[in-house]
Length: 77
Image (cartoon, rainbow, N blue to C red; front, side):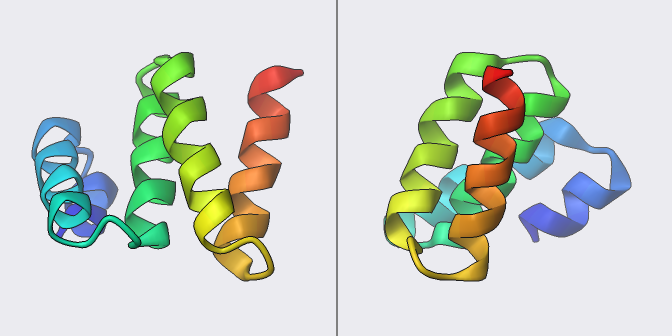
């Protein structure tokens, strides 16, 4: 639901859905990644870095972790 809202450009409802997802399952790396993308889109660098770091730690060896790392590096450069 959160990703669909994000793709539709509804950032507020997307954020609500993604935050609900991580409250239900705080190991949901994809939800943290999408929150990071959302915060980046809004120019909120610190919150983006925090949730992207969480996504990277949760999926260190996987695709989500790699994507989170790429975005983190871009935000820090």
